[in-house]
Amino acid sequence: MASFLALSACDRHGDEAAQGEAPQETVTVRDSANIRIVENHAPAWDPARFWTVDPEPEIVIGGTRASQAADDPAHLLWRLKGAALLSDGRVAVLSGGEPWVLVFDTTGALAAAFGRKGQGPGEFNYPIHLQVLPGDTIVVWDRMWGGIGHFDPSGTLLRHRTLDLSALFAAAQTPEQRLGESMALPLPDGTFLVDVKPGDWIPVIDTRIRIPTGFLRVDSAYATHSFGWWDGQEVLHTLTPVPLLFRAEAVLASGGSPLSVYISSGDRYEVHQFSPTGVLRRIIRRTAVEPIPILASEVEAWKARLSEEGPLDWDAWDRAVARNPPRPYRARVAGLMTEIDGNLWVANRLDERSSEWSVFDPEGRWLGTMSLPFGRVTWITRDRIVGVLTDPDTGVESVAVHRLNRTAPR
Image 1 (tube, rainbow, N blue to C red):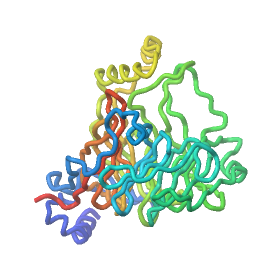
Image 2 (cartoon, rainbow, N blue to C red):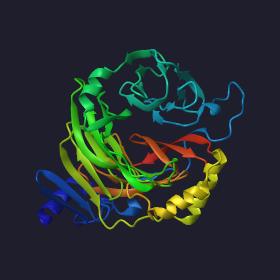
Image 3 (cartoon, one colour):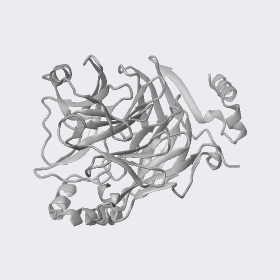
Image 4 (cartoon, rainbow, N blue to C red):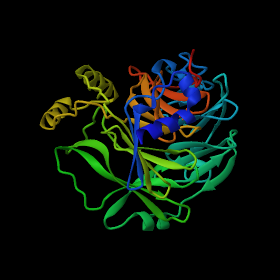
């Protein structure tokens, strides 16, 4: 079987091998109960010949403390929820500032701004998801089961969609489970994932826990499709909220053709690939992944940043953490993204100023790993990548567009 896989892979990827691809024994593939398990031991490409990102951005939006001038758009960039490229290179940004949707041209100048506070067509209470569909249709999903607005890049409202909440709750909420507050993940076809919690679950006070979380897809007929139960967000449950640094949580992504949904609990370097109806098709793993320790200096710097936002009882925090020893390592999977070719990007590390991502092809082969000059990736095209930076000292956010070079350097 190993010889057959190696021969087939060489036939499919001979041009990659010519650019320095590693031997195909770096991956082991086996089937178990109609589920393909892909275990990656090393990247398929020579690390020196894998893709690169230009160090200098082509477009930068924001990044400095904004002036109060009426024509300065920088004061609108805060609590960024998403940023995406339009087909002509303009950048659509979903911001927590008002107006909600900002469109910048290829020089970084503000070209359009639209959306306002409210519950009517074209209005949002607290938008949380940004999509750009073929034809440059900008879609904004509001929190708390609010409206879903479809706009053209100038801000013209093309469609306002509302959800049938009675049908949604009837389908997703049962005596055994309660529905979350918002869509967990919009899918490209207009359906979406929601999260549910056990109906009778009550956490024990003064414990470090992962909240049990289930995911359901709600289709156009309000039928639900289950993706199982996962270890959700990590919390230190006390009488007063206690924040955690580098907390583990379940992460989601969707994309590819045919459409797939990807989920990881984060603790293990393992991603489950599902069909849109919740059928598990593939488990993607990386073996021998060295954990990244959480340093005492990182904890102290994090405390200092939070203290600037308001007073916190760090003595109580220290006592709670002492009773519940912290996890010494970061989560092995910190985030998931998909891109135009159906490749899956898995975040090994996320910081305010940089990140590291491993790229897997649609069949689960680990192609290589890239370090990126921003903390969050929000959009990936064939030759561009969009990210969000947060200055750890000031909290100021910015959007950067870098060129993505998929041709291996020579």
